[in-house]
View 1 (cartoon, each protein chain N blue to C red):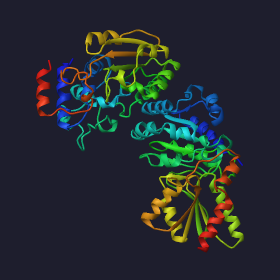
View 2 (view 1 turned 30 degrees about the vertical axis):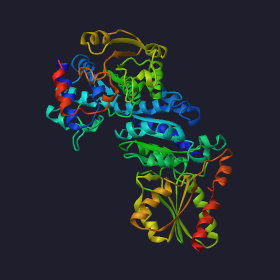
View 3 (view 1 turned 60 degrees about the horizontal axis):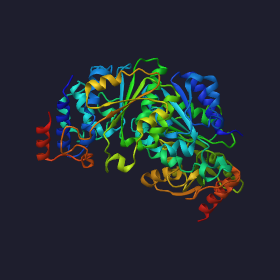
View 4 (view 1 turned 120 degrees about the vertical axis):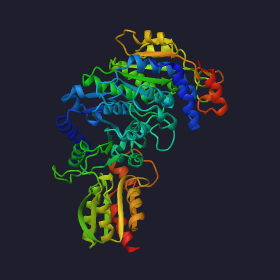
Length: 260
Length: 308
C-alpha cells in the first residue's frame, strides 16, 4: 500500500503548479481512495478497459487531484504527468474527463449526478451478470443537490446491492461550514429512511475503512466517512477558504514540511 | 392520420428485437408515451424510474457506460429541459449512446396547456456538442428514426408528438442523419419544415399551386447534423426560403437554417413558428391556429414574401 503522505504531497504540488484547484476536498479523500485502489477494487492498471473491473464514480469531481495521484501511483499512467494538472493539452482536466486519461471510469464535475450514473452503471453490470461493483464518492455539500435524493430513492427500490456510496463527510463546502449553509443532520437517518444500510467510520483510518467496507447487508450500503477538509495541513484544515485555492510557494513549503 | 408516438413505439419494439443492448426507461408516463408495450415484450429490459427525470438521465448515462443503448422518454419539456445539465455534462460530454425520446413535442399536447407544451426542446438539444437531433414528420419516419439511432455513435434526441397527423412516407423510407428529404420542387419559393409542419407545408403548397405559385417543400428531419447540401440546393433555386416548425423560431429550425445560410449563401428567410411566447390550453388545432402554425399561415407568408 502507498503512504498517504505521498498522495498528499502530490496533491499539494499539483495544485501549486496548476495555480488553481481544490486542495481541501482532495486532501480529505486520500485514505478513502487508497483503501479503494489498493484493497477494495478489482482492477488491472494494464487493462483499464477490462469489462469486469470494479468502477469508481468520483461524483465530487473537484477531488480530481487526489484521484489523479492515486491512478498514477497505482500505475495507470506515469507520475511524470502529474505536474500537468489543469494545463492545456494535459489529460489531467480540471474535473475528470474520461476520454482524456486512462483509469477514469466516468467524467464528473457537475455535482449531484454521480450517484445516478453509478446506479445506471451498476444496473447495466448486473444485467450483464458481471461480478463488478461500482463505488461512488459523494461530497457532503453535494448532498444538497436534489438529484442525489432521486437516486437515493431509486437505488433501494431496484434492490441494487452491487453499488457502494461513500460520503466524504468533511463538513465544509465552498462558502462556509455545511451546517451553516444547509445542514444535513440527521444524515444517517435520512439515508436509512430512504432504504439504505448506513455505516460510519473514521475516513482517515485505513483499518476502520477496511472494517466498514466489509459490512454485510442485503440493502444498498452507504458509508459516511468522517473526514477533515484539508487534512494534514494545519492552516488548511476545516477552512472553507481552502476549498478552491492554490497554495503559493511559501505555503507549499510550509505544507510539505507539516506532512507526516 | 397517425400520431408520431405510435411510430416511436413500433420502432422501439423492433429495436428491442434487433439489438439486445436496447433498454427502455420511462418516467411515470409509460401509459401516455406507450412504452408499456415494450415492458410487456421485454420486461427484463424495461425500467420505470418514476417522476425523477434527472435521475432517469443519469441512469441512462450509466447504462450506456456499461455498454447498453438506453432509450428514455417522457414529455419533451421534461426529457430535454428538466434533465438538461445531465444531458449536457454527463451524456453529451462523455458522448454516450443514450437516446432521448421527447414525447408530446410542440403544441400536440394542446389541452395540457403551456407548462406541458415543449416549444424550446429543439433549441436546447441542438446546441449540445455530440448530439444528433431528429424531428420526424410522420409515424413511419419516427419508427425509422428510432431504428436509425441504433447506428449512431453518441447521443440522439428524437422529438415526436401525440396528435394524429397525416402520413407522408412509405414505411421503408429510411432516416439518415444529415439528410433531409426534398418532397416537391418549385421555383418560386422553398419551404423547409419539420415535424407536424411538413404535412401543413405540403397542404400550403397545394393551395399556392392553384394560384400559380410553385414552391419546393423539404423535410429537415435531421436538424443536427443539418442537411446543408439540401439547403444550398434550395437557396440556389429560389429567392426566398420559409421555415416552418412547431417550436420557438429562436434556436429551432429557423435558427439552424439561418445560421447556415448567413455564413454560406445569404438568402431571404422567413420563419413560421412560435414567436417568443408560451402556448395555452385548447385542442392542438386551436393552439396551432393561435400560434400561427397552419397551412394557411405558411401560404400567406409565401405570398407576402413574393409580393414584397
